Each structure stands twice: as C-alpha cells, then as structure tokens.
Image (tube, rainbow, N blue to C red; front, side, top):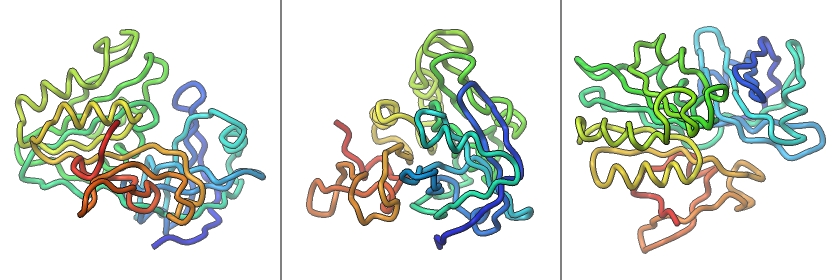
Length: 257
C-alpha cells in the first residue's frame, strides 16, 4: 500500500560518475516489492520516479539509486545525510518472485540495474544452480553494482558498448547463450526500451520473461496518462499505464515498436 512518507536520509553513496544512491529510514518503503518505485519530490518540480536498489525489512532501510540528468535529480543528488525526502510510495507493480525450481537470470542496463539488486537480495536460487546476472553499460566507469551481485554468489557477465570492461557489445549476446542452455529459464530485465525490446525478441516464446520499463511519469498513480505504452489487451492492442499497471510487465503484455 502506498502512502506519503517523510523519510530521513541516513547514508549517501556515489557508485559511479553522475550517479547517487540515497539510503533512507522508512519501514513502509522497506516493505516494497523489488521493481516497485518511489515517487520523490524535488524542489519546485515534478516528482521523480526512482526504483529501489536496496530493501531491508529488518532495519526499515530502503535505498534509491539514480543518474543525475537534470535540475530535479541534481537537486536530489545534493541532499545529504539528515535531510528529509518527501516520497510517495511504494508504487506500481513489482517483479513476481521466481519459481525456485527453475533457473533465473537478471539482465540490467544502466540505471535499470538497481532494482535487480533489490530482487537478487531477496530471492532464493533454484536448486543446484548459480543465479546469473548480465550487466550492461556504455563504459566501464558507468557500470553499477557489479561487486554486489558477485557478493551474493551470482555468476556475473559484463558488457560495455566500448569494450572497456567485459564483453564488447550489449547484454543480448550473453543472454542468448544463457537461454540456449536454459530454454525454460526465467528472465527479469530492466533498462532502456531498446534493450527490453531486444530481450523480448531474443527470448522468443521460451520461459517466462518480465520487463521493468523506464518511463517519464507525471502523477505516478495512473491518473494523468503521461506514461502510457502500447500493450496487449483482452480485445486487442490497448494502452497500459507504466506507473500503475507496471512498471513490470510480462513479455506477452507489451507491444514494442
């Protein structure tokens, strides 16, 4: 259940250039499902939708990780420990937990990586398997949270557009190889729309695929219709609200350009 929350910042971390992670103390936010998001107030501007990178029910702590791209996120990045954030959340539909009888793979690109860490921290690996995580970034300095996934015991593949770390190219190469070995595997992905479209196409009709969309939003609760995308409805194509119907959708629910 979402609510309006005043959450004090308890920790500030800079994991990469122009990226900031803010930890807050808020037991209601800590109960979010991985893939849900916080709608964070920024000084005099629209709220910003930001996914959770960490969720700890025991401590009541939650964290959001975002890229500084404009005035709103620049103001948010300037906030220090002790400042209080105005947050509406948790909002949206998160990832369903995987079937622990089948292997699963996480696929993240850029700022789509953080919600996958929240999921990885909560989910149990399938029996006799090592969870797989595929991370992509434009360049090595912008690669997020790689060591955190390794610390969770994941097998991690890294790709960068320029080849400065890991395999040169996109996450699709490693994903195709993983799917070839795990045709009934479960895939959870978050990143740019082009990446998610490629993930859906690469998986075909194999296994279960869940995609978390990154989309500009207005109200965050489904009223303004600023974040709609084309999807499959019961009677044919229909528009879906990313903030309320998503941001997580099954592969079958979406229609990509």
